[in-house]
Length: 128
Image 1 (tube, rainbow, N blue to C red):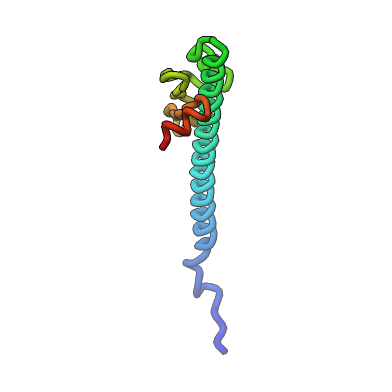
Image 2: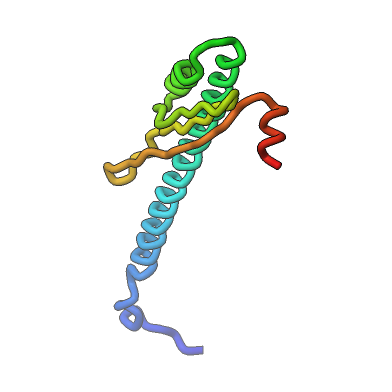
């Protein structure tokens, strides 16, 4: 067996350190990307929940003789959303709400969600 002298692999010192730093950098970037995706999913779910609840509140207001869009807007705002559109079609209420998306590099966009609610018998008849 031949022994390797101390000066033989001197130019390879620190190569593992550079590789480890690069790997840590990639892991940090992936973690940040997954964090942004998770925040987008959470914001979209928040928007959809606000839209669903707003549409239900509007439909309930129609049934009780109230102002459907005012009730829907109130519920949307209470759930952290902005009302973008509210339409009444007979006893059905359709809403579109916007929720601010997560910030990524200082910028963010609004995430929309739509929902429609009304009496179950009428919704079933119109969806056929």
